[in-house]
Image (cartoon, rainbow, N blue to C red; front, side, top):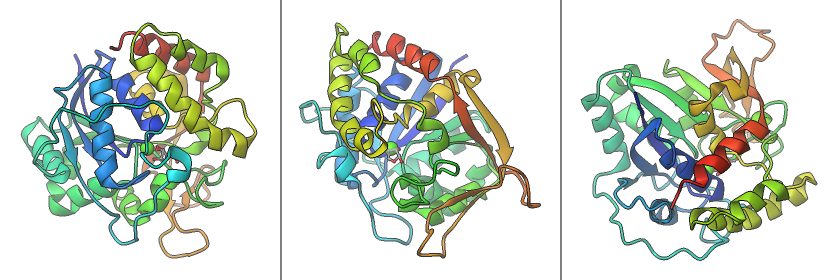
Length: 312
Ligand code: RIB
Ligand code: CA
């Protein structure tokens, strides 16, 4: 029985690896990929999503463009991490596959209303703007989403775009607060987890030597993507954030987690976008997320390597 999913994304090299992992996994049925403004503007994230599908040899995947900016704040992007294209590293051809005409938010709503309630999982790899807009436009969908699995936030590890905020949440904190408080089953994969999943030289070497297009292309993306973080953190390789979302879907046993309350700072300029995680349950705030903290990175990379080797 395959698990139908929608991937909401702002590619981004780590998004690319997550998308390839999903497309290479027969356990998952990718109903569509919805692009959102984040790492780079929407005009690039939607093109990058299509480039990744073509790299995977899957030009029939439906890609939709969504929000061009966050709900309230001006868009903050991350070219300093991902390069000006958002997918710097390999030179990938301009996509031939079409962008779907339907807006991503309408696709999300239509899919959730048409499919049996509680069957579709939404995997978010970027700011939560599209999901928040869908919930605002048609609140009925909140009871029809099986689960949201989101890369975002951080608590014990602090932030990566400010000292207290992780990028996906920081870009659109109001969207994150709205989605977290919508009563939808929610798994959060924060920096506390993804910072343990490092693109070490040995791991990237396995991608580089694959006898397909995807492996070497991903290795080239990792070479570019890690240069900023490896230097910042002084580590062998950078944290591979977004594939952790897909890996959790496929193998939740690779992770340790706790059901706790996650609140998002939307007022303070100093800590805007901070995910305040009540890990020790010192408040009476109701748990609203399964927050991952531990991960077996070796098992995750073994899965990733095995699945990427299957790709075109
Ligand atoms: O903070 C890391 C997250 O922000 C990842 O999803 C990365 O792709 C960027 O979107
Ligand atoms: Ca991302």
